[in-house]
Length: 139
Image (cartoon, rainbow, N blue to C red; front, side, top):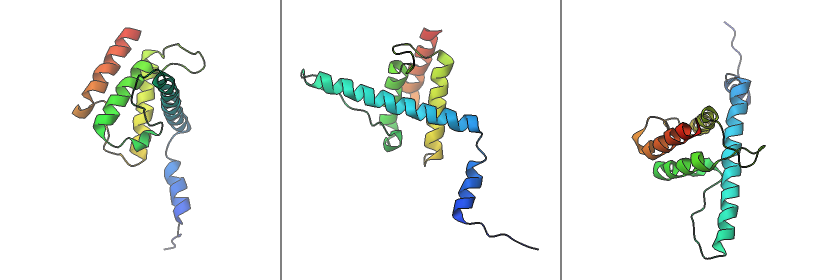
């Protein structure tokens, strides 16, 4: 028998190749939407802060939100506040909003949180209710 020794880089490439290109694109788009929403929201908060109104800021790097309670809170805000980038102020259609959340969950699972399930875990009930309400409102 003849074996081939594979280095870590090759192993990682092979692992990544299992993910379809469209899935990678969708995941990147969802994470970018989160980051852009967070940065814009934080910018608006900074402006309001000048008038004495204090609001919490969201971390644009979702991987740095490590507690489910905090993630539940911010995901709930995200699904209600996020808007299309190419058509500012326009809501995403319900299915697209759901796909954004799927992409974010996939990103977090692929980066150290494999147990995470926003859609069924009870610690994300507030998010689930907000997503459901927003999807119904947009229908």
